[in-house]
Image 1 (tube, rainbow, N blue to C red):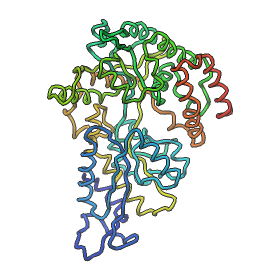
Image 2 (image 1 turned 30 degrees about the vertical axis):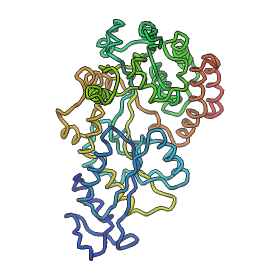
Image 3 (image 1 turned 120 degrees about the vertical axis):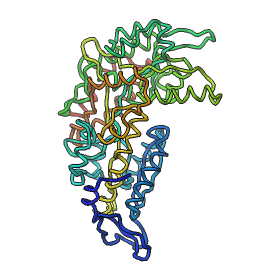
Length: 458
């Protein structure tokens, strides 16, 4: 990828060069700096990432190859992590003080609290800042300071099977345009839930019980921005959280969601949509348009057995007294130093790689995921190449009118760390207990109050 000339000039002194006997020429506009350690060894920048979309590994190889043409003296080592095990591997490395130089994730106050996340403001040129579309660069900030370069602005919503929705008389076009309330979804969910001819169940809604995603989407659509507000005050202590718990409890008691929800993985949730066992799933992304279209092609080719599906992108239902919200988060690359710091030259080199993996050509990630672009150069390069179906693309654009982002960008590192503690130690097990019918909404609401006071001091 062609990295901006201004950026190259700004960070020129950072390049680590090989021995003069290699005969490798420096890219124009760069001034060679002294070798960092060994004349014969390039500076190695380690990148840990995920399969952002089906062809992201191919994209990554091309981006790195383009980068190497311009900066042959920086070696980029990439590792593709799995969504299931990657976060654990990264946490272990971070806790050991040896994270990769670049990691694909949303920014987190927890990262800042370790002292290893590198603030990027001094590396950002005006050219880079101006390339980001309004509000998108902010998705990589913590308390106004830049810690990440967003690659995508993801939308968390729900998705449905068009055939099942229409068989039940559901006006999905109206829902895409105007949304639906919790009470409306309960009534629709009952119609979508039934026993199939083979004796198996078709559920109105399926989600996984192993993550925080479902509870976050429900509570945000009850008017709760997060467990805490922007000032770090604990707010899961009123009727809004109790109403959220009661809504989920009703879905379980009415059989709209399967009894085994607490044990379902994200993969099992999606498979239920494929198999016609779930009319609607949470969470779903605009990217399902591409995934399901590819699956349908495989069915036609005889590679996969199953029913072809027409995917419908749906908003999350909302509380009757709160407006509907779509949870939007920026994901991209975050830069880290190690306990054995490799120095400023290495940090500058890592930022060059970071910018290359986030620039115009990297916009293919948003294009493949059917998401709004984060940079002007990306939107220009991929103009007219959208892979989304018109009605789902229109819905995704409509959902951007009422978004809510992560509160972590507003919190200090102490409050952010406490938020993560509450989410993992209190929120996740509480909702799993609710799915399993082990605790009533009122019990969990009181538990939230007690634990909130204990952790946040309120």
